[in-house]
Amino acid sequence: MGAQRYGLPAGQGPIEPTEYHQSRDELAGLPQTTAEKVPVTSTPNIFSYRAYVFARNPALVQRYIKATKADVGGVGGHVVAADEVKSVIAKYVLDNNWCGNEPIFTSLIVTHTGDDVAVTGIMAETVEMAVVDRLMWDALQEGARKAAELGLYGPGQDLVADAFTGNLRGAGPASVALPLPVRKDNASQTVLVSFADKTEPMAFNYYATGAYLLPRFNTGLIVAASKMKRGYLMEIVDLDTKAQAIEAGAHPRDQRALDGKMEELAKGLQEKVITLRAPEDLYDIEGLTRASRFVIARIWSRDEKGERDQLGYVCSAERLHNIKTKKGFTYGGKDDPVLLAFAQGDWPAPGELTSPWAAAPMVAGDCRGSHNLHILPMPINSQTSYWSGPILSAITLSCNIHTGRIGAISDQFALGTPWDEVRRRASELAIQFRLAHGVKQPATLHEDELEYQEGWKERRSRLESRFEVRPPLTFGGNGHGAPGTAPPAGARRGDRPAKID
Image 1 (cartoon, one colour):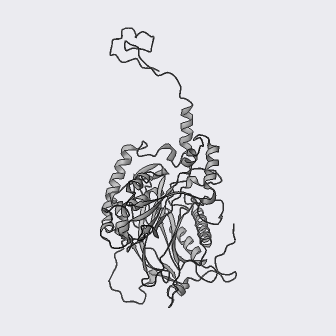
Image 2: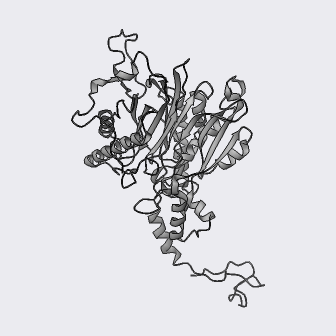
Image 3: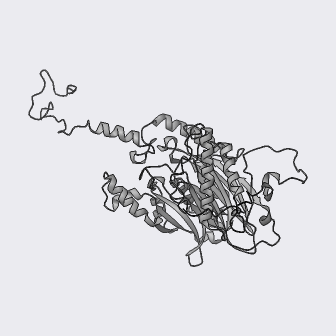
């Protein structure tokens, strides 16, 4: 574990709150243009480091937007993050938001979706990603300690690694970073940030195959004069190292062989990936991404030759059951993914990005991580409900790429919008589906995908020992009894055989 390389030098204490501009104070000293506001969502407070975002001559440097999310303890089971836990995490980041001679995050927000807390911020390329990851790990650990103090459910649940080892990949939290463009003429960049709880990375395939592939969701694919007309390049990752281990020769019931092969495949943090072209490879893309195993992890725009240009979409394509912990290769959850994507210009508009969710599709996850259920698009900072079902939030950030400031936020699934109708319909479908099917498939997942498998494994093993191997019950030429036996006395052709104990 490397040294802690963030925070002010020893003896200087934490960064003072006055060093940050907060969006909640944005109208201080300005005339009110409306007499009152009708609250429609729990809009996040934006913290921006004053000395940098209000600099007269901001540097034209490469910046990144980074989002990190984890479940460190939920209220009432798994339904919502406690405000106190969120504030403890926010305070730790703000107090220690320094590396060398500059802030780590020039601007940041702290949010929750269901019981997952997320920190999203803008950083310069001069800050090492390992330092940022360490800050995030320690902040989430602080949140876990507060969750334990409050008696919340599953404190530190997603912090599956024993200790920080240099980066967050494989440690449990979902974390992604997206390079912001570097240009002089236009400092504005719209970024869509989406968080999902109680579901898996495959759910985000609806974003990618809808907005970037199908004109019925994105008219810009047909009418736009930007790079969008050339289509996109999609990198699809194979997340199932267990299946890869079996395909490499490990027997599916030999746990030691499976673990050994999975560990071998995981060495070097490598991934099995394929790059396909949209729209040329539409059928191949749709075919692969129909299953949980394959996830569209990154999307690139295309240059004049149709080759890779700019990265504009990245999601946390990682599955916790492929991570080795002190318990070995155990299934750890549906991974609750996070997504960063550019919007406008060469990319789909925010409404085009989110439009596939209007169909209220079903995703894997839900209560106990063991069901298929319709996802619920909700405003940011919302809780789950109804069997702790899958929940999705999406906000757009207006970012100044010259100063590194998040200037304003829009909630794409806000209350008082047509998404209210989608939520109502999704709720009706979910209730009907779960009540009709209960524990049976297709409401429940295949047994290999059940999140909490230990109880089922015990039951399956116990019942397996009671199965018998014997010839099937057959009937002779006269239609009665087993081969070579006479029909029961008084039996007539067509009678049902007697009950067998």
